[in-house]
Amino acid sequence: MEPIDEILTETEALDLPTEPMRLNMGPSHPAMHGTIRMVLDLDGETILNVDVQPGYLHRGFEKSCERGTYAQVYPYADRLNYVSPMLNNVGFSLACEKLLGIEVPERCAYYRVLLGELARICDHFTCNGASAMELGAMTPFLWLLKVRDWIWDILEKETGARMTHSFGRIGGMAAPPTPGFKEDVRAILPEIRKVVGEAEGMLLKNRIFLDRTQGIGILSKERALALGVTGPMLRSTGVAYDVRKDHPYSLYDRFDFDVPVGTDGDNWDRFMVRMEEIRQSMRIIEQALEQMPDEGPINVEDPRIMLPEKREVYDTIEATIAHFKLVMEGLKPPKGRVYSMIEAGNGELGFYIVSDGSGTPYRVRVRPPCWFNLQASREMLIGDMIADIVPTFGSVNMIGGECDR
Image (cartoon, rainbow, N blue to C red):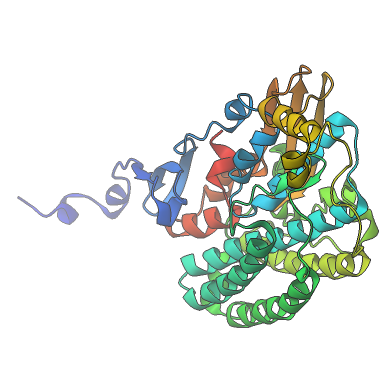
């Protein structure tokens, strides 16, 4: 048989029919963060099309919330975004308090801000550290998670749990700040600044890191807005939307801080926006530490909402009955519906609650930022290479608990 190059002319050889190759990627933890499957159509190493398929976690958050009392939702809310669960606690508390028409004491509002901003720093450390690690930079990953673990020490001291705290309460918090809380937070801030500077010093002039992030995974401002993208992903495109600024809650209108924005909406901008947001969170924390009262109530004083003191439960029949009814039947907000939102680690986290007047929510609907950010990943990946999937998908910071509801 004659060699094919002797049979075909050069032009004919280039016109040989080819078909895209279909490749399954995930669900596997190292690449797809556990619960995402991608079906890729490839031309060589170039992505022609991608079908992003969530749904492998089987969480069922919303229906689970409609089976118990309002207070029993907190463990579920923790597991929406299990990287910064304290923000979920605060978000659900504010929604219920809006339904009840109450406001927590000032000291509680400051306490929520401080715990929430610490959780936001942990979230950004996890995302940026993992993104660097997925590009081969293991050292910054270990540095960032080292300090995250020190922040977890503080959260554990305050709440009793390192990760899923279930510390929020409707009308307040489970417990007041510990005596050394302010000193612990002040002590960790220099360490956070130090490790952020070290990580940036190692990465921001690294040729490999620059080539793998700049101009990769681009999302335009127009498409981000059309798809409902929020948080660092939206701000990386140049839109300075932050719920803390545009719709202030929990005293955020008292703090002086900036909203970092990017220009190109690529992996580089998303990384840099999160790094700068860590610094802005520290600014908020420093101001909140100065303004927060050292004394005062941490919960609303309403026996229809808050559990009585444990000593009173043991000593008086009135407190025993109140405790029993709140635990078994739950607090009973008036009939109605509310939507309340906060700025979570990945963007606008909203809770829509419908009350029928009973102690169990009639409907709970969550507006998770990851769900909307995830749908933008298809456009961010098409046209790039297979090797770009992991860093781009990592910069989305998809948390499965928010998507698989």
